[in-house]
Amino acid sequence: MGDDFDFNTLKDYDFTTFTDYDRSVVRFKDMDNKLMTRLACLFTTYSYWPVKLYPLIDYVKRNDDDFAAILFENLQRLTYYKKFSEFPPEETVSTKPPSIEIEEALQAGSLLDEPIAVEFVTLLAELWVGKGLDRLTSILSLIVTGELKPEISIPEDPEELTEWLDVSVEEDVVRRQIRSKLRNIAKKNSTTYLSGEQSVDYPYKP
Image 1 (cartoon, rainbow, N blue to C red):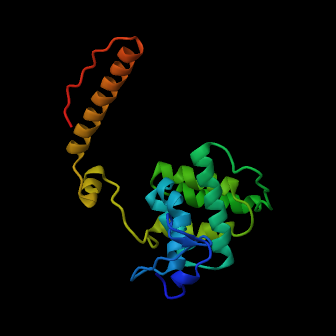
Image 2: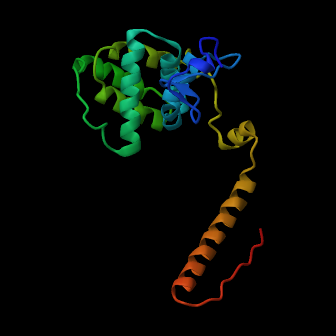
Image 3: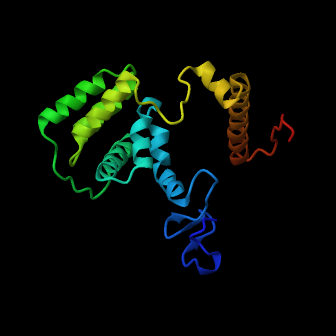
C-alpha cells in the first residue's frame, strides 16, 4: 500500500478493486497510486486505440495541465463512441473549435501511415469539443515525423507481436478449434436433452 494510506483508517475501501474513494491504494516500485488510478481510467482507451496514437493517451497519463483534462474528455468520448456506436448519455456539448483548427488537425492526421490511426484522428478532430485542438495538431505532427513514440512500443507485425507476447499462434488455433467442437457438443446435447432423449455423447474426458 502507498505511504499515504493507513489500512485501519480507510473509509470506503473496496477489497475487489483495491481502491478507496476511487483512488488506488496500491503502489508499485515504479508507479504510485496516482498513476495507478489514471491507468485504471485509461485502460479501455488503450485497448481500443491504435498503438500509433498511444502518445496522446500517454500525455494524459503523465500530465496534469488543462490540455490533459480536455484531451482526456475527448479521448473518452470517442472511445465510448467506438465501443457503443453512440455518444455518452446526457452529454452536454461545449464550444466547438474554429473550422480552421479542425482542418489543420485533419491535415496532420491524414499524414499518418495507418488507416485505422487516420480514422481515429479524423473522428477525434471532427468531434472535438472545447479548446486545445491546435495543441492536438502539434502532437500529431510529432507522431507523424516519428519524434513522438508510444512509451511502450508494441510490434505491429503479427509474427513480431506473437514473439513479443511469447505466445504461439498455432496453439491458439488449436484451442479455438477445441472450444468450437465443445460448443457444438454442448448445443447438440442440450437439443437432445430438451427433446426428451437421454443419451448424451461425451467424446472428451476432463
